[in-house]
Length: 328
Length: 290
Image (cartoon, rainbow over all chains, first blue to last red; front, side):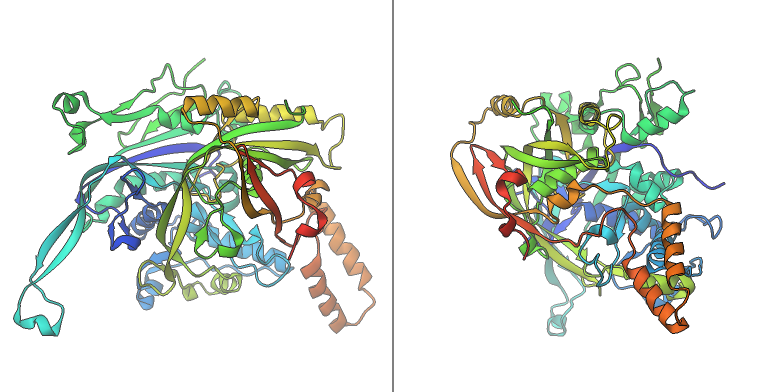
């Protein structure tokens, strides 16, 4: 069965940690972990997170149900790909370009891109609009329903430089040395929070379905498990709080609920701020001002079935449980 | 107090980048939110063809700090012509290769603002498409207020860029809100005058917006094509093809003429923390365009 187009607004909070690794290097600072110079908090860019989602999709593309359904290819790939390999691996559904005006053809091409490519459908993209009257306008912009913000660490971070011995030398001149010294940068421990938003108004335009959203959350939960490397250290998703706006009306009033759920039923910042992250009492009692592991954090979800704003359902995607929506 | 058709929203976010058009490859933000960014936020929350916003002023609660961010981006846009080729022969699809050192990847810097908060005051006006008494100002003002108070939005607004999401809240009185926030943040009210130089007003003339527009219905589009076909019925085949091409390139899909994006600038001045930007005060005919 084909999945319906997403109609409910979602706001989500992603909590992830890094231990002895570099979650996102800063090209401006010799690949040091990104750090906000004003507050010393760590940062992870939106594009870094989106890259991991795309890479996960490339590794585990779901089977396509039929050529008429959404495809799961990725349009913006990482690094140098061997083109021939790509062509073998991917199958796209061919479609005749409709006869008719340039407008209709452009529309058809845009729709085809959205249907075939998961990342186009989810994050959007920029399509060239040629040299006509629309050049430079927003017409070529395909706005995707999913929006990520920068991840920021809860506390300040202290990046360390670690010197390592490389036993495989790179330069011919160093062959006699057998070993050379190298270095890498790590964050001993940090917990990051990133916010995300899903706008159903754009889901309608790109054909983003409820199954696509489930897939996105799957990718977010598992993306670090398939991105292991010595540089990355240990990265773990510690929380994925998905606030779904379902509408405040009686379930019988489905049409009204749908209209309401599209716009949302509560302020996103109120919902997201309801998940509080702070040093745990134990850590404080031990005199720590600085977290050393996730055990030093207390993540308190203050939302319960009683106090959750009406029309909101909180899915704890990392735990597989849900709270709400409040009845009556 | 402001006239009754004015609305004020408080907006804030962790980051913001209101890109200067003269430096748009490696983005550099204006120091303060631009009127077009403010319009974008309001339209993300509520917009209908029967009304439009004129940004009256932007009050600065938190100016934010400068932060430089360098990220991997792609240099390529997706060409519609190649997309058409891919539709016919999907084996020809060539993905965009992003990331460090990849063919289409590049690193771009951005000079953005961190931790900002503004009060946007806008005038709401009706376009000629509004049919009173059904479409009246009161109805739209109530809808805007209702959405802003309840946190409803058509799509998530952003502070200049989509990854810099904005939160918003309704404010009944901008001056009172400015004073209240200054007390809450225990910071002094901004005093004095600061010229910010030329600032982008918007990418089209606000008068173009005043006319309002709506998309043509399918039957109207069909009628348009039928009329055209009738008008070329008598001419030669070759001439017909030529005219059809012209028609396809120039036909309208809405009731308004297509607006060619054209930047308009104004002389921005921050007076006591308030950027005055009502087009009737800050835009004169000869400051626009290039």
